[in-house]
Length: 174
Image 1 (cartoon, rainbow, N blue to C red):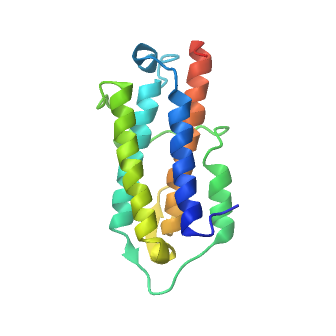
Image 2: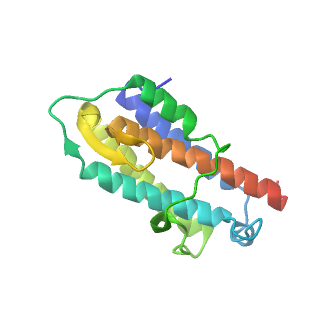
């Protein structure tokens, strides 16, 4: 179900934060830096990528144009919630959000992720009343409002939590 209230979108952001953190539980620093195959991301690469995307998207939300009339599309919200975590269709990340090794450790990457996610939740709480008035464009999903962008942020973290679970399985990490 698409988020209907401020508390639901904030809960979705928090739930996806917990899902990402749980996906790395028990992964050692050495394992976190190990790629399962040539050209594939490591666990720390995934966390860095999610952190970078969260930072970029929050910045865009903070600077979004405010419409005079809200734009609400509950079907698009439901579609985004279903489509984003689904890893059956590979998606190549744009160069500007690909991992660059900016976090030396998994612990550092998680600290960065937790910090930006806390700011994102604060934004969602503070701007709850006008999220549907915010107008942004997303390269894959076209025009979106603030709620839809927050759904994208939450779903993106879930998508990469699933990728981390795939990496763990490929590396034999229980």
